Length: 120
View 1 (cartoon, rainbow, N blue to C red):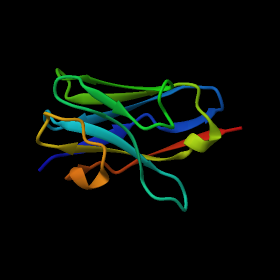
View 2 (cartoon, one colour):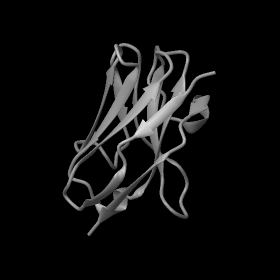
View 3 (cartoon, one colour):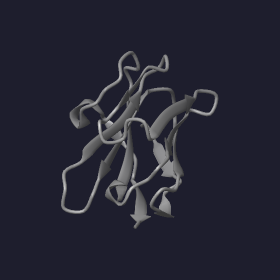
View 4 (cartoon, rainbow, N blue to C red):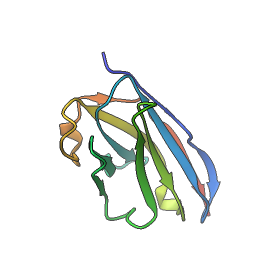
């Protein structure tokens, strides 16, 4: 059973930064999604086993995804945060690490979510 443990969420002022971490029980293709209150879950970023990356349009240029395979951990560095970035952020994983996957349905395993709140 794949386990994903997220950390790093919190409250930050607009323009600030946060780094989310997702510790996995192995090496997988990983993704980050977010869900704001009353909205559908949205793709944020993804990374494959060889370091290939994808980003959602709303976060390009502000967020950076990376991975440390020695720690089986994926990071999401979030800079220039805006109030509209407020959401629960989820990491996700799938065993096939060849591609970056941007669709929610492509992931089998999900973390419990971590709240990010950006105040104006």
